[in-house]
Image (cartoon, rainbow, N blue to C red):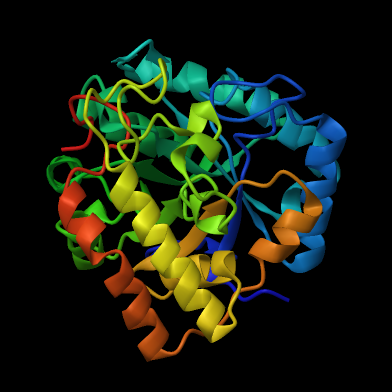
Length: 339
């Protein structure tokens, strides 16, 4: 059985591996992930539960509640055995939609209906820019908590100032879902310390940088177009790019090569090393992994105890890239949505 980790000071006990359900798209591809048939998603959920994973993360924004619908079908009869995290907050193009209390209630009601459940274990604000008013947001989240429709609330993509504003308004979050991996370390500058100071557990998404840390890709052209939207890649790499920057393709693949070489020498699978490195960082409770197959999930669950020396060397491999990207954790937007 996989061990359990407490989220902040809440009563939620989660596995260190969380299944990211963005790919549970009911056979409808989007700009990031190819089509995944529902039967494949179910086989991934079955394998996850067999391996001791109890944590599943979805969102209103994933297929306009479509991911939640698929997850509910995959979990049929096993709802009480798992922890479900979902989020509210949509964007219209590049523009964030701001939610009032009424909007939050409607989004939650729609999520509960899609998930075929009467409660969500962890309900999260997807981006701080999705809040119309921070005090109104917190008041509504607490109200939904008192009604038993959510057990705990948290947030995603909150920066140092966002966290301060939320706490100054009376909110207490058990978690902050953030992008974090060996190729993307901006949260180490300010956000990770701010979370540790308040006992906010970090849920690391994109821990393999959308597959780059699996070791499969050797050059930018190998990477599917939808995954070339981040600041690792040139703004000209795909028409879907919004960040408007030159990117860091040479430095990114130089870092991947160094990590691959280190893992080969140490006889450690690259993906296991990358996931285990993230989980070894103070304050990180769980890594959110997306999966194409049950076999891929099984590989991602092979966590290892890294020696202090290997941890240090892995960090050194990406130190140059870390300093190049700096403290802005928004991989995609021209103007950061994280404050």
